[in-house]
Image (cartoon, rainbow, N blue to C red; front, side):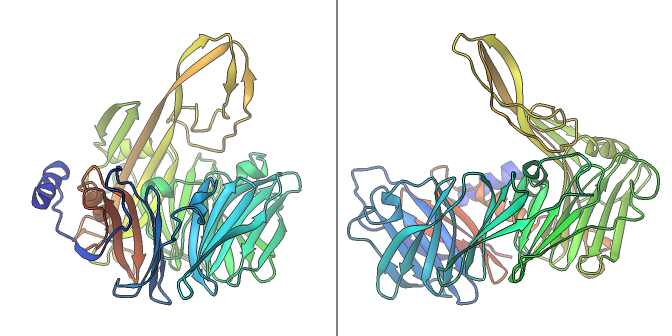
Amino acid sequence: MLHNIFLIAFLLTGFPVVAQKTVFSFQTSNVDSTKKSTCESFVVPDEKAGKTTIILKGNDNVEYLLLNREFEVEAKVLPANGLVNTIFGKRYEKYLAGVRNNLGSCFYYMIDRNHFSIEIVNFTNNSIVNKPIFDKADEERNIEWFTSEGRFYLLALNEKKGELALHIVDENGVVSHKNIAVDLSGYNPQKLTLSEYFSYSHVFYPGQETDLIESTELTKIYPYPDKIIMIVANYNEPPHIWTIDLQTYNVIKKKFDLSGFSGFVGNKEKIFNNTYLYGENLFVLNSSRQKIEVGIFNFKTGQLVQKHEITGSSEVQFIETPVEISTKGKLRKQNIIGSNKELIKELSKGTGGIAVARNNKGQIILTCGVYDKGMALYSYEYCPGGGFRAYSTPTGTFYAGPNIPLKRSYSDGAYTPGFKERYYSYTRTVNFKITLDSSEFRLVVAKEKLSNIDRINHYLKTLPEEAQAINTFKINKNDYFGYYSPKERTYFVKEMEK
């Protein structure tokens, strides 16, 4: 049966998929065979300690597992009363993150937008404690949350006070709250609100590989042990770099120097750029109507290490032929990009991003392009009961259509009495892929066309339809994924072969 799955995957995707090594399997306990088996899972790797914590939540019970470096069960906590005394027996809105620290294995949950709780699992004394950790002011709007060095951070903003609010739970469970003043002077030509300026955010960890969809986000947040770096993209502006010192909580802001790139050489050009910070280097995609530029900079010094340009006459060795893929509801359309000129034109019509990943030869694969997703109106009819209408600025992705680069949007929830609107979803993706050597970042012919992320995504498509609780994670530069098989009532962890 498994062989057939791999054969089908090859025929459907065109990529050969090899069997992956199973490093861990665990059959859930106390399962009621009369009920349909379901599972949720959360995986928290701790590379420093060589431990991995896995939560497996079933219909009526939950199991907490602590694995060693060899993926052997070192300890297990199975609550006697099922879900009753765990966080899952209470009301909560969302699981946020997990981390191992001096308290044990800690898991953080949003009860609602203003209240947050922690569940601490101590595998030494076989105990589980869950309790509130902090409440957030109602005027603070959540931006992102993340863990670093055993600590949990919630980053929010206060529009009225013009501040970022940082809520911290340290490795010993001590809670603190820092207000950080933000001055947008000289960094806000579009006259955005603070909420709009830091919108469309995503957290990335240093050295993390990513794909195109995530890379098109406009606010990228990178946590380090001693600082938080926020890189903000804005239309017709260079990247804005905000650095929060985690000792003093002072903020340093600067505009990254793109001298010599389109839009920054004295002539007025409509440009859009986006970035990705990977290791010590900042990768920049800069798009204009004349050309596409890819720059690799030393992030610390700002020095340009390598630059690649795509013009109408360039000869570029793409990994695969660039395509435009658009969807409207359930309809899907694909258009092959036949020339550089067409590619440049299509990239000037959407929200750009640059994604960095590696193949199994260690080469860098850059996926550059645009990705837009939104809703469009297809009917507008009278409705006596009225309704709420959310809308965006003309340049937002929500209603503007995919042919306008995204700036920043908002929704005011204005009441529209007497009318009912119906919408369909749409997406538009245009991308090209190139391969660089890992030392001087020069263009090379790909020896392996798939990045590690591509290989994982292709393999996950071969999993049985009934597979649940799918996770992907990395330990010591090795890629893993886990999933639950209801038929076997077993949770598997497999290592991706290189």
